[in-house]
Image 1 (tube, rainbow, N blue to C red):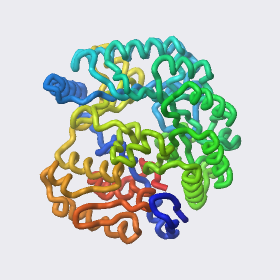
Image 2: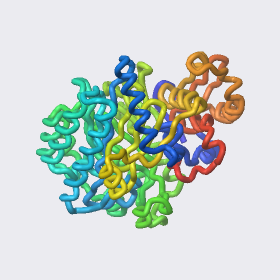
Image 3: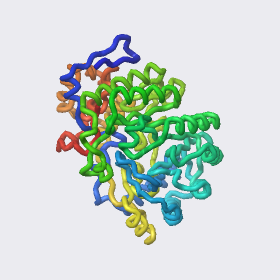
Image 4: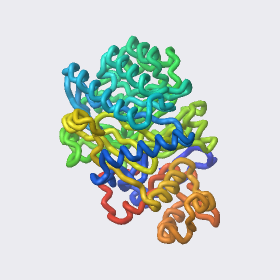
Length: 471
């Protein structure tokens, strides 16, 4: 496998043996510790305490702007590959009760942290946020603006199912203040679309993207998945070429994780139709080469962006960050998750809402936060999070910065981890020096493998099949 691209001039060769060693499951590290480590001992009381500590910091002038994530779980049609928390229904009237519950949840937050807290990032995900009607989206945004203060420069994004959107809807979204939009594409091949029960012709996405560009959306993203049933290296190369033709600002390229024992919809996928590992690797190889040849910058892990996009600029300037939505230009800030199954981060805590509508509704009906699990980070968690996020975002860990911030000696605190870095260094993925750990250009493509070395929880149990594969 030959991996091209800046900043190296010559292609770098990965042998089959190296690829087999790297073809393993691993976390995406949108957080550390990862969400599978959350515990039920963390509940509404602990979450309320975290909010109050934030409110005290805001009074003292020490609380940064908020990030908001709002989950809309409804979809009209089931995509067989999907591992998201969703509710398949054509009964749009179900949105009414959900909006009422969201209003209660928002007011519970206002009661703890005060009204008008500044927000620098808002994202609507799902499910399909465009399941909501224009009037319902208007109501939702008015409710959020009444509770929080969206900053003029705020990133306001929404995920759009092309099958439930029209140019008129995009104009309405723009008028509501959305300036970032993400289209779920996955693959343009008709056979693949039929195999995963998501049929949306190339022309449909092309026309919507042209409208979004004409409306002046600051960032247009497309999601792709490789490793789906009926995909071949040749068919996926055609999809990559079509995406290059559409030229979105950002591209997210995900590896399909087939876990039918965990995700019921995936049981409808015939495992015999899934591409073999060697073909998956060829898809990844050609996709990377294709996007780079179209002028995209490799951001890290599974993200690409045009050189002028804010994400690419942040990477060049060393300002890249990572949160539950993936790579971001936003500095570390508290994230409030709203809606069923949403995950939040406040201070040194993580939390997650109830995963079912009934449990979510019942908690709110009693005037309680719908938190069902979470985590208060330990000192060890915090220092490991700093190391892992430095690797994932900057590709470099400077010992001095970690030692000064966390009062540890890197070589002493992570003696076992430095030993485990040895094989990765031999493979050319990382350089371990006297003052820093540096991910190599080749290592950027497998940065999860480097970060996993410092994951104490992962190293302790070695149970990794719940994660997607690195390749």
